[in-house]
Length: 111
Image (cartoon, rainbow, N blue to C red; front, side, top):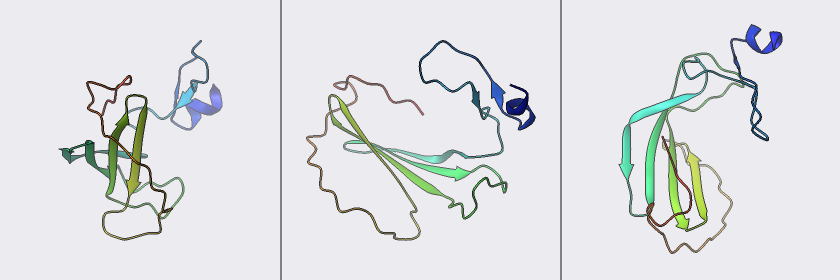
């Protein structure tokens, strides 16, 4: 707990299996935040994420990044993170998707 809080993280013990006890708080200077561009698409959502501040844990951060969320089946969600300004290699994996709606899915997505 001391090491966690010394890093500026939040400490929250829980009985929930596999849930982290130490994590960055919502107002942390690390990570990304929702941008102004949240678009509903035919199969889900497209959201622009912006780096929070100049601090970096790993270096070579990309900003902005785009998160695409696709409701593929009642039990399967696909998400894709990518740099909208620079093309990179992506594994050429073709996954057929009937594209269900959020109302039909057995899971919830929150932003």
